[in-house]
Image (cartoon, rainbow, N blue to C red; front, top):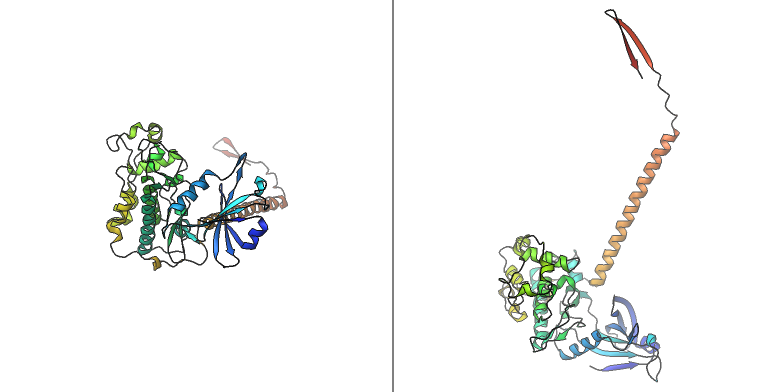
Length: 396
């Protein structure tokens, strides 16, 4: 992977024409840009070289570069080169003015945007193609003894022609051959985090990626995330109410995991996975989904086994061209924009309704104020003599 040193921001602007910001997070920003000479569209992932009192490359960036240098696969997003930007030709300038960019091919869509767009009519041939390509990428990554550790729908990019690119290796790590080595437990975005991590296991393996792939397949089938937990406890409640609370008899030594008792208490049984996907009853895809979402990682199939599942060989065949994608990007940023606009419309509608209610109340108050006050009713007393008795009837 070559690196290119650009000495100041002016040179950066001469080399690239920034189109727009397509993503933003703790790591920095992702810019869509055009190389002025080649006219190629690229993605520039900015890397701040200081954070608080720390200077230099973030560990996640070093990890991502090391991982991407290892892989060479059509379904893994490759790193074109590294841009280093400083202020002067003598070297790095002040920390606040120095930064780096990872340069990738620009890929317009991701699975979050595609699945979330109701205007895109999903079909089985295209879902098979996306899942097959994703699993092929995962098999390639695992073959190098690596774990991605953050597979989710927004990290699965899709080109206009339907080619899948697995991206964002900032949390990835190589698996230690020693099975007793422990890893950081805080990996994988919450909605795609497997039970072993939620229960506190720190001796996990590549099966955490397989669970995340299963969550994406369920997302295709349901057109929404299957386990959108608000926190780790809620995640466990959603998973185990559907799959059943594991015990030592169903998952060896699970009760010894440090968060087992905290995370499994008070969970009521709910509809099973097959009940949840009752409309798919009889379809082979549910069998694959159950194998991917096996709560015991020792019983969960591998990515390689998943690729050999009968679902992929049944009609219809996987087809990259079975789904026509829009020319405008459909990705996580697009989804967030749609949600923000929806919230804005909801707030405007609420404010208009409040205004109408206020105007109606003022109109009623004004009408009441314009009316003359009601006359005080007079008391009318009728006295009647009946059978020698005097009966008084008072009317107000």
